[in-house]
Image 1 (cartoon, rainbow, N blue to C red):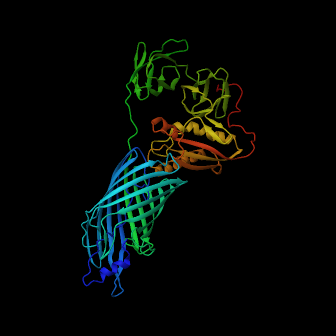
Image 2 (image 1 turned 90 degrees about the vertical axis):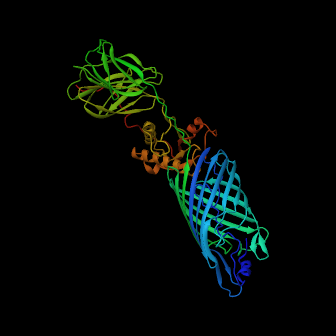
Image 3 (image 1 turned 180 degrees about the vertical axis):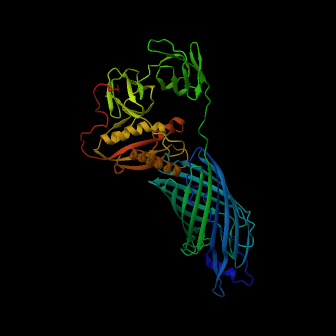
Amino acid sequence: MIPALLLSSALAQTTPTVPRLDAHTLAPALDAPALFLTDTTGFDSDQRGFARVLFGYAYAPLVADDAMTGDKVDIVRHLAHADLMGGYQAGPVRIGVRVPLVYGTGDLGEGGGLGDVLADLRVTLLRRDRKPLGLALGAGITAPTATGLGVALGRGGVGWSARAVLDGRVGPALLAGQLAVQGGPDTGVDEVAWSTLLQARFGSAITLTPVVDLTAEITAGVDVAGPVTLRDAPLELLVGTALHTQRGVRVRVGAGAGLTPGVGTPAARALLGLDWEKKPTLEVVEEVAPVPVRLVFVDATGTPLPGVLATLGDLGGVEGDDGVTWSLPPGVYALQAQAEDRARLRRDLVVPEAGLDGLEIGLGDAPPPGFGRVVLSVQGEGGEPVAARWKAGDLHGVLDAGEGRLTLPEGRHLLAVSAEGFGAARLQLDVLPGGESIVALVLQAPQVTVLEDRIALRGRVFFATDTAVLSEASHPLLRELAQTLVDHPEITRVRIEGHTDRRGSAGYNLRLSEARARAVQAFLVALGVDPLRMEAAGMGESRPLDPEDSIAAWAVNRRVEVHIVERRPAVASSASFRGASGEGVTAP
């Protein structure tokens, strides 16, 4: 760099001239997720585009001493800039461009316009999501496009730079270091010139919440050919915060100051950044063709019933001589049917891809006034009947052959079913007077198993895409997990871990995984689990089960794990309904 002492010889002339310098030495990182200055290895996804703008103000970035009077001369007193940046990443290669717009004032004049434009290339050699540390190499070319000739805001020639970047995660913190060499045309005052600068940068971004990062950075430089003194070496500290959104938009605010009076280090600096990142589209929605469905409603003797009014989902059926027909895509639909002197039927019907042709469905006699009927069948995963216990409010009983007909008072009931060697099932029923619901339950092997160091989940916890909103499909698994924690009070503390795949930035994935772990914790608390028994942690993409880049690997790596942190010797306990026994209890 040009020592401030050397500038005094130029200022001492009878007619001071503006030195051929660039006081806008702030070179922001083009696509670092939260940092302002320090580059990262940046392998956030296989393909992505990004755009950002950084507004800044620096006070007194270039000051010298007048050799004759000893007074301070502000070569650049006020510097305002807007750096426009953008680029694209494909695999490990990222290209980008920076276009600075600058305006400055000082004792030697004022001016503004376009600064020196940068074209940049970075290649990631080691990905931090696969290795302990990430490593990248980069290079840039600066074009002599500066138009602010009234102040020292351009070097007047083609510049170049080369750098090495090393980064990694330590808990919630991203640490990054950068070593760079910058060169170009000789720049200086009188007979003293310099052209090569060795620069080091170090930054840290700590994730506080899923949407907030705190950052700190320090940058230092030294003229390779000149004398190394702490006074003349540019040294600057910058702190800030980054606010993230789930739509790829980020707001960054920072402030800092120079720690030495080297060229380009201001007395004070303020920054405001707005970033946008285009994520790849990953979801594909396929249209499903409708299939024919024909149902035949019969009485207890198998005789078809006339005059049946039936709906399947939102569609009314067309009754013919041989049943009721529909045409709709495969899926699960709510079936309702009503005939004279018959119980009103309500049940879920699974429509397979091949459709249904002539499936017989029985309509039973109407139950007593004020009551409804539930036809309950319980099977194992292989389709075999399972002897099970059931409970609905104060009523309970046993299904010895795996099926039975329950008569329940009208209203809403929580039907709980359990069987030895199977996971429990719970279903909320609305029993209507005179109605009949057919409920077919398939009991699966327990989805929650207590092991020595963890609680294994056989199923997966699902969330809405790119959010921490739990899917209803995950509620049965989490209810079983809550019941398991209730049944095992000897497990005094567990850690709920959220994990993501590697799509998206590492910082965003860390925040998303923590938010998902906390969502699971909140759901379990709502089910009655003591919050003091649980802690939530986000692991992001740091512990993949499958290191490949494929849809199958991404699905495996998106998961929730429950680890046992503390436990004491087991004590006897029982579930809230598993002790129900006796014959089936029905209303008169």
